[in-house]
Image (cartoon, rainbow, N blue to C red; front, side):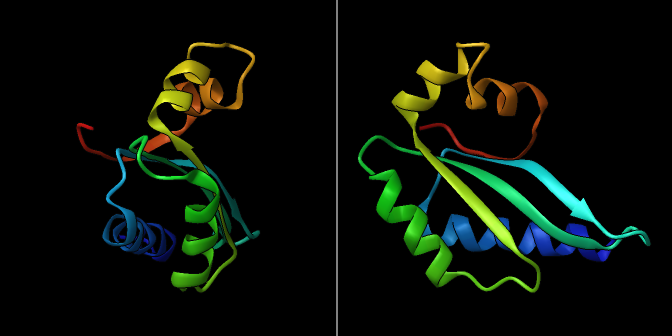
Length: 105
């Protein structure tokens, strides 16, 4: 497995251990001219009982990544509503992102 994929896989594992999400999507990844990972963005969808803002902060503080990693967090109800709107970020992620993790919530 390429090093960049290992980094993203490890971050996915770390997130699942911290917050038990419903879904995690890889939104984007940046690479250098040699193809090495230089940064990435994840979208984390959590149960409605979890507040997205504080969780986003917790993920930033409690995870350690060797390259810059950004998060966007949705609760499930907001995700489902936004994912149906073809003008929304959630719609673009659901239809163009890479689903890394899914659990029935």
